[in-house]
Image (cartoon, rainbow, N blue to C red; front, side, top):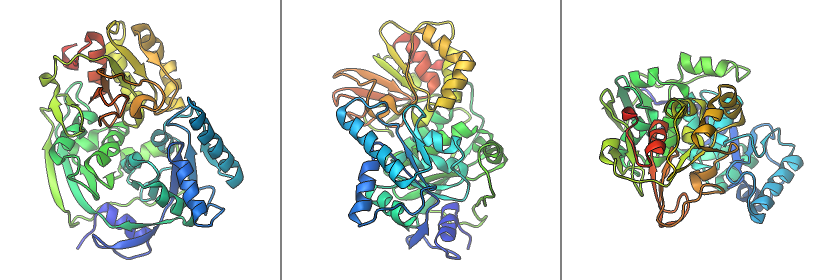
Length: 418
């Protein structure tokens, strides 16, 4: 019997020839990531275990991105505590305010390699599965254990194989694909399962698109989302990482919990409606929804590819006077590239507000908060009640194309009509 990607990675990391679904293994982790929203709790968990040193300061990554820059005394205290910890532990990889969102930075800075195990005290750590790693979010206590021992307990997950075929049409993106999948599976339909994403659509998809898919695996309850590495992966990583790595592919006779097939040839842009990610409708059903704020950014859709999509629609046009539009690049590198390309200047001319790389409005951390009764349209990953401000506001999720088109009209708009 063959094995899935997740089973083979966890077997290697735990020193076993093979592992079985449901088995509990103690696996070595290759990286631990904490940030300003979770890091202090992980450090406290470490101290509660009577430990004063991390197991390897070169394999711990700390990022200030959630409330960055600090906007309250409490968030400033958290930043200071993490900066002090970095100095105390001699942490090599610390990304302070302005560098960007953790899930963009780790791959961009060359920390993610195929075949590795990565844990992060953030649910969207599964983003790194786009590079063929077993990457998963853990609670702060488990992150504290990993800081101390460089290991974590894992239950070997079942794997759902998702096969996506068809050529995406103009202005239909990876975001639309993952919203379609979320609608099919539901917000808890993949709980503690690994999603293996494959098919001709994935093969043709950019690395940015694959990151969007894996990023939202957690929105269905999945433990991980994985795309097998291929030549496109290796080419993207070539200039970013040093050393040898060993990619892992699924066996041809691997056993899956189930296989879901999607043909996206005729897919139209999709939108997730309040207050659940699986409450998905085609954009054509929502053309009467008036919006107050648009947020473009986050670890889901704040990459250069996303900004280019927005730019392709907004260049030379004006944002509706009834809409405020906040654009937040996912990293300093992306910001600088968008500046060089003239994208930032054109979007400013259109009426957008550009902010420093951070999580920003995605989780209602510091900027872009919605007031009671307001409607937000966002390219981020969650639309739970109160996620981006008042619990009396509403949030819709969409692709950058839909967001840009809607900025012009002040209503949810099909980008193919613009």
